[in-house]
Image 1 (tube, rainbow, N blue to C red):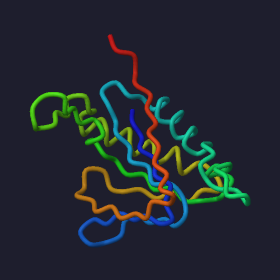
Image 2: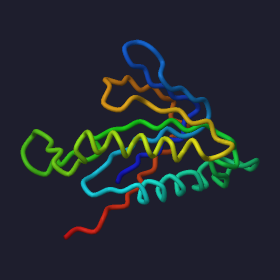
Image 3: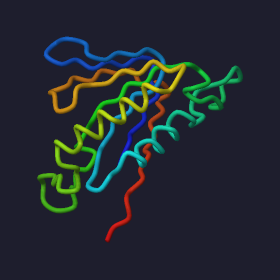
Image 4: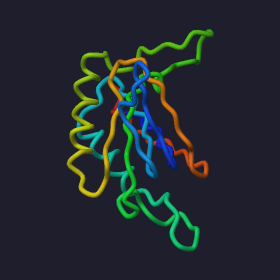
Amino acid sequence: MRMLLQRVSSASVRVEGKIVGEIEHGLLILVGLGQGDQEEIGQALLQKAMQLRIFEDEAGKMNRSLLEVGGGLLLVSQFTLYADCRKGRRPSFGEAMPPEEARVLFSRLVEIARQIEGVRIEAGIFGADMKVSLCNDGPVTIWLENEPPRP
């Protein structure tokens, strides 16, 4: 599983011209699901993301978590985080989780996130043609990854 975290002052997702998810100050997380990923991996990465001290305190130091600042969280599925560009000019997505499995797991991750108190949770629509807008704050962009063991 791969998550690309972006600290934002605002972010939104539009589908067919309509806003389906929108936050102000908080985190936009692009979520890539790979072959063999499981709910436990996603839960651990979500917890890590929520607890990362990447928001500024009174002294301007990155010393507060999303939970401490009460920011929003916008989750967006993005299978292209599994693009393999090592050969040729066309990315391969063979390591990405099949769409139907990924739809179920992404929905479950959104449900898990919504159980966290003190954070407004929004999400894009899995598989939709989404237009994501954001104002990256900092900019602060962080990559989280927890690959399952390879056979």
